[in-house]
Length: 108
Image (cartoon, rainbow, N blue to C red; front, side, top):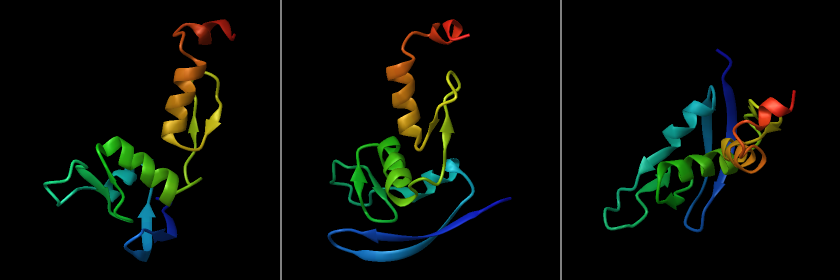
């Protein structure tokens, strides 16, 4: 399996670190999203790399991909074959460009 190894420089107001991260694909990004140990916080999840907090796993997964692994993965639109750099960008593209579920049939 082809593993990507990258050194990440994570900077936060409270900490600065260099982390060796190994991922084989975008499906591995969830390992960097953990539950917030501060039970009193409204932010239930945190980024294991920089302590950024968020309300849900999806938002933190998007954070990990765009901040700590920028340009590492590409996503192809299954309707028009456009290449996008993040899963969030792909979802936004599909929503804004292909709202009509039958639009791809008219492209042929």
